[in-house]
Image (cartoon, rainbow, N blue to C red; front, side, top):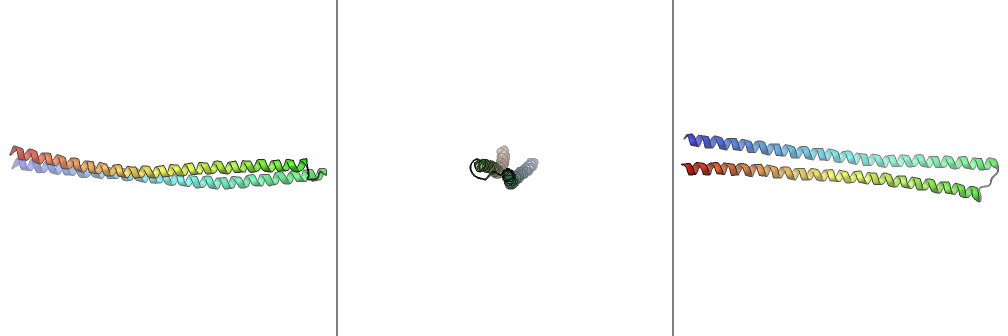
Length: 160
């Protein structure tokens, strides 16, 4: 009778250990998934901010270009220089240079935004992996506990 009580107590403790282990594995997986989801949202927000920053910076650069062209035209007009030949080519060169700079800025910001979006995707993928690992750890705990209970039962049966 005592052996049966000890067996039942051992199985109960093993069952409790299994339940606790499974709950812990699930909580760890959920925490990892939540952290990955949060990290992903932060990266996506940063990507959106980079794109907005690019639009604002491009607007500032275009305004600087307009101002520079107005100033140059005013200087040329004041000096009586007509907008043909060298003065016109000089202004055209300024426009080309600034357009190139604006295009490069847009490209750089878009590249940064895409890199952040890729990091967000990786974070979400890590969260998915964490969920799968958590499930495997839960199963491992369950099967380990079942195996341990089976060994207890076998031991009891052999010692009777």
